[in-house]
Image (cartoon, rainbow, N blue to C red; front, side, top):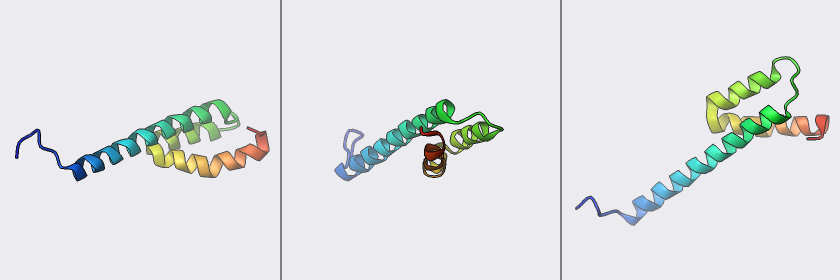
Length: 78
């Protein structure tokens, strides 16, 4: 087996995980930008959400998306 020999299943797995990683990073950046732009600056809420998103990467972005965005939308309309 040479270095140039790749298994098709290995390439598919690599491509899938690579795509998931890229999409997760794009979602993380979106959540961070959304938080910085749209969160009200009352108290430390904005800073805490930014820290959660930055320190936990896409998991923090998911938490922000499912917890804070639906709560913020009726309150602020954005």
